[in-house]
Length: 284
Image 1 (cartoon, rainbow, N blue to C red):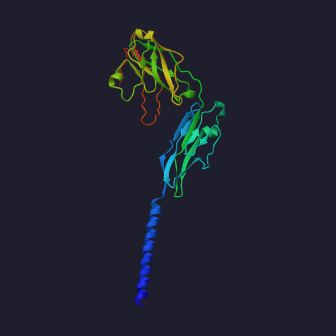
Image 2 (image 1 turned 60 degrees about the vertical axis):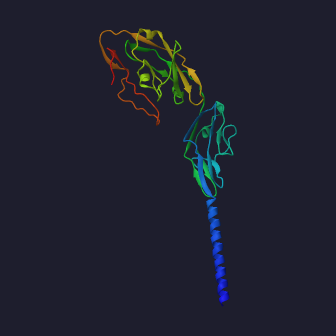
Image 3 (image 1 turned 180 degrees about the horizontal axis):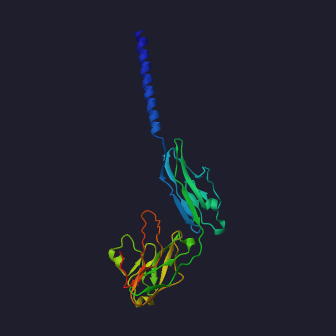
């Protein structure tokens, strides 16, 4: 009887050790698995030119290694469109350069989502709004500005509306070869108090104009942010300096009662208060 009791205790102890070992192996197995985590999640917006194309990266890690799948907003999988869209094995979504006549809205103006999944679970990226822009020829122009001597002149670089979202003023150039760059975050108070100032919105601000300023001409240089192409304006702007006749109260250059500005976070912008008068008006 005692021998049988010892045998059963021995069997029970062996069973407990086996269960503990099995539990440890299960725990180790659980520790070796991990759901997907994005290493590089694609941005919310991707704009590109048909002349450059674009690569949208999406990478994730996990155990087992996750599979990357691109889907549309409705959840349907995205496949390859020869010459227009490629889904690479590494998870990248590629849009090669294409001819203007090959533009397809369902490919080039689409919302995509990157899905990473393995046996543990799945995650999906935020919406990726892809928009391809067909490169078009454009020319910027500058109008002649009339200003009373001693006042401030503002020359505007007029960019066609169909490219205004992608083209910005990079600099101004006068006929003597002097280049005027936009003010930056590192600009000093002296930079802002000088005679010339390029505002964040691209206008050339010229203070205290005199007769000598009427002999200069100015061009703006624009840059297309999608293609990197720079271009000088087709026309040259001039200042016509008029002499004051008697006293003149300040008049604003615009009769707008209110204006709304929309800018992205961290972007600089300027509020213009353009007026002319004699004596030249002060501002506050």
